[in-house]
Image (cartoon, rainbow, N blue to C red; front, side):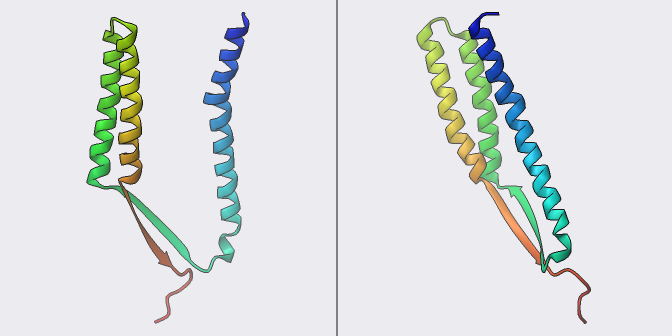
Length: 118
């Protein structure tokens, strides 16, 4: 194997295996820490996240942008057309990805643990 293949394999490993594994391990550790402190809680907060209509439309446009850019890149005859497809992909991902991220509504319920007093 040449050096470029080794570097590509290491980068692939880090991006797609090592980083997600670390993130999942940290989430699991935080969840276990939270479970350990569960007996010390004074209130329980329940979060409900749902997409608004703006978020749903942005998600649809995001998927269509990705599919369209892939088709445009595959049908490109020149380097300039490939660059245009890549730039449109980047622009669409930024624009519609922001719409998806901001198009969510969060609601919270706060409850006290224990028996309700009558």
